[in-house]
Length: 265
Image (cartoon, rainbow, N blue to C red; front, side):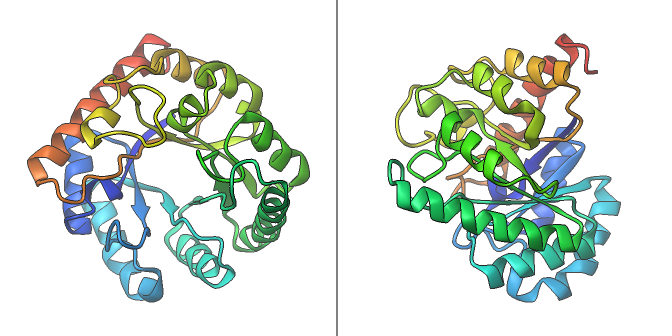
C-alpha cells in the first residue's frame, strides 16, 4: 500500500505548500485536488500548463502522483481530468457519485453515467473510481454493489471512504470485506459520531474518531491491496499551515502504526 494525502487539506494555500507538507509528514505520494471552491491546485481548464510544474514538484519532494479528485461527472470536465491524468502518469481519477439517496431514478442515471465515463477512462489508460457518499445515489454497500455489478469495465473501481460508510450506519470493516476485490483507491479519514457531515478537520484526523482504522487497514492487507490509501480532509481552507501540517502528520503517524501492526510495513 502507498500512503498519500489529498492536497485539498491545504486548500487555502498553494500546491507547493501541499507538496511540502505531504513530504514533511512522510507520505509516499499525493492526490491532486481539482475540486472547485475548495482549492486552486489542479485547475482542469488549464491543466496543460500545470503538467511541467507538477512533475517538477513531484520529483523535488519525492512524492508519487497517486490520484486526481474532482467531483463532477460532466463529460467535458471528466475528459480534461482523464487527459491530465494520462499526461502526468496518474493511475486514478476519483469523482463523485451524484444523484440522491433513495431515488431509484437517480441511481440508475448515476450508474449509466459512470459506465460511459469508465469507457473514456479505459481509452486514456486510467481507472475511474467512485465512492459511496452520504446523501448521493451511491451511498452504502448495497448501492455500491449495484454499480459494480452493472459496470464490468476494468477501468472502473471503488474509492472506499470509511467515514461515509460509518455515517451511512454500517460497519466500515465489514463493508470493506464485501467490496474489497473491486477497490482501486481508498480515501481515509476518521469520524466522530454518525452525523451527516464529516466534522471539524482536526476530528477527521486518523485516530481521532470512532472508526477502527487498524482493522480496516488489516482487511486491505489481507486482501493483497497495493493501491493508494490517501488522507482526505475537507473544511480546512481557512486553516494556517501549522494546523494543516498537524492534521497531516498526526494522520500519517496513525496510518504508519496501522500498517506496521498488520505486517504491511
